[in-house]
Image (cartoon, rainbow, N blue to C red):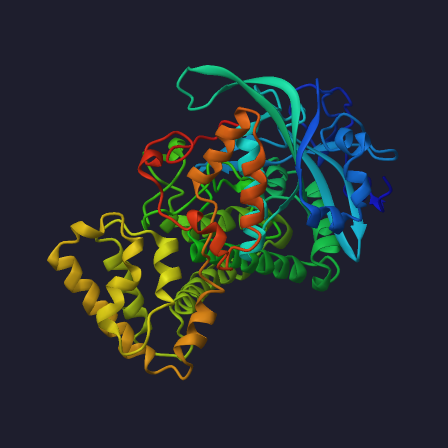
Amino acid sequence: MKLNLKNKFSEELPEDPIKENSRRQVKEACFSFVTPKQTKAPHILHVSREMVNSLGILEADIETETFTKIFTGNEVMPNTKPYAMCYGGHQFGNWAGQLGDGRAINLFEVEHNEKHWQVQLKGSGETPYSRTADGLAVLRSSIREYLCSEAMFHLGVPTTRALSLGLSGDEVMRDMLYDGNQAFEKGAIVSRVAPSFLRFGNFEIFAARKDHKTLKTLVDYTIKHHFPKIGTPSKENYIKFFAEVSKRTLDMIVHWQRVGFVHGVMNTDNMSILGLTIDFGPYGWLEGFDFGWTPNTTDKQHKRYRFGNQPNIGLWNLYQLANALYPLIEEVEPLETILDNYKTDFENKSLEMMCSKLGLEQNDDKDNELIQKLEDVLLLTETDMTIFFRNLSNFKKGDSKKGLEIVNAAFYTPNELADGIVQQWRGWFELYDVRLKKESFSDAERKDKMDVVNPKYVLRNYMSQLAIDDANKGDYKLIDELYQLLKQPYAEQSEQEKWFAKRPDWARHKVGCSMLSCSS
């Protein structure tokens, strides 16, 4: 297997001088060299052909033993030195100190077709940053990560990618809900791919330690390789760098809100400096439209990372990054201006996004009011977000009386809608109808526009759980079925209509469907 390998990160940034793979505080270094764990019986379950091609890997290579060994950590590519990154982070609002790649090991970098990729294994063994954990991952969480990263890409959401999903052949002990009930699960490894896996926490750790020399080295490296248009290092360009990170972070979160995605663990160590969705743990898509929903049981009490709070958390995290970059800038005002811009930009971009979901293009002063009334009525009874917005595109001007009928499939209890709720819905459809008459395009044109921003298929937690249940029995077909389905989330795919459905009752309170933890 021949690849155009690069090692820019490990060659240009300071390394940990200690070569022993032992848990410790790593100072004045961006990474530590480590070797992935040898596994009992590695086996590749699924491969993303798209990412294979993006890396310049030949189709014939996929079936080789070398491919299996490299992407399960059982063989190291010649002329490469795997490593784990050092970073810190704020977890649930509190500074947690050094965290780092506790179960992720970066294999190498690849340049192909003028694009730069970093390849990383998740679940391939312990590192100096593993703390009290084993550095491994289980099949359950690995299936979720593999499917979700690729689903997000095809939804048009900025994201890290996945190259392969493999079994290690080892059994891994896990306490799935942190309730004392430990059990062995199948070990698995996901090969992840991104231009960079740098996080806010990579910069925070050096600022927290007052290691401004390494902080500057890392920022300069990041601008040089990932934000080259900004130019050479300077105070002005550090400000531009922060502004660009802020913009990308906001764009990513607006996409999350558009498709109803809830990340679940928006700690600063899970925030990509490139504005990519990263670290797919206890995530979920909204079933019923609910600003207060979070899939993460760890966050059940305070719901810090609930759906409606994600834009605010993005801003909070940017404040922490601003604090980390301040020693290089030493001016508060430009940083505060960027953070203030985030707030106004969110209002504008959120309005633009919601208008696109409703098929509205002309500017109208009352659009905010129309959207607010829609959100209010959506909360009156459990209403499936994905189905509602997808079916809304079938609405025709002048037919407001049929509005409820068109979106009826989105209601979880359509036969129990109280008269008051029905009247509010009818009132909203009348307003919507009046608003649509101000648009110049036809019903068919509007439907086409709405159907490319409102997905028909998303990776609902119960769908992942069905694939996990089958996989635990040795049947991996559903992984590929869902993978293929989610490559075209906006297409009708009438043969897959069974997946365009509300969450079934059996999944409402099932572990893995409605309740998830960070255990993986």
